[in-house]
Length: 82
Image 1: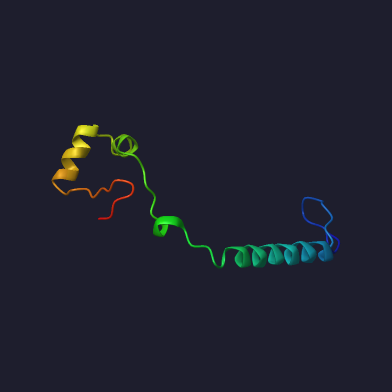
Image 2 (image 1 turned 135 degrees about the vertical axis):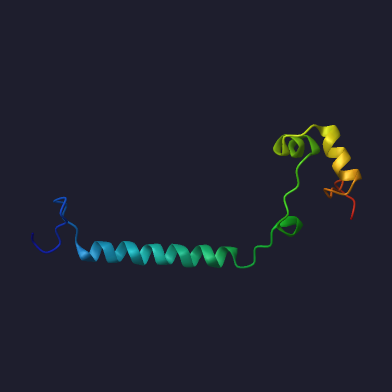
């Protein structure tokens, strides 16, 4: 096997690999710079409807309401504070 040859027979120049790695490093640095000041809405919490919550939990909407009344689950209406 010659220098720069992979066992698959594919020839790869070390300079090309290093150039790709450097480009990846620049892309990562750019992404970090782009998102350094990013603050997700609602403190990162995700809000879903009661219909979607019931579907996700595989319970009826009535059961979901019961859970909220018994304080098993916490829920807020959009625009209100806990």
